[in-house]
Amino acid sequence: MTKTFTHHDLVQYLYNELPKKQRLALEEALMVDQDLAECCADLLLTQLSLEEALTQPSERVTDAIISYSKTVPLHP
Image (cartoon, rainbow, N blue to C red):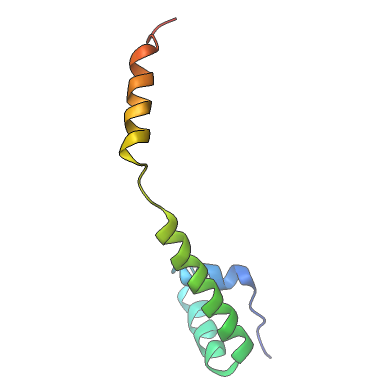
């Protein structure tokens, strides 16, 4: 019987959150199912893009937040 894997399974795989047995089954399926492998590759590229997009705020933004916080009283 062939196991059907979902996008959710692939995301869990990319974040190393699948149980070992399921991870091994998915890796085996990736070797024989071209569509599944392409979908996994697309999700991997998306994951990498998201990680690159996570950046620090600019110094100007940080300074504006600090300046504003100095004008707000701690207790009403």
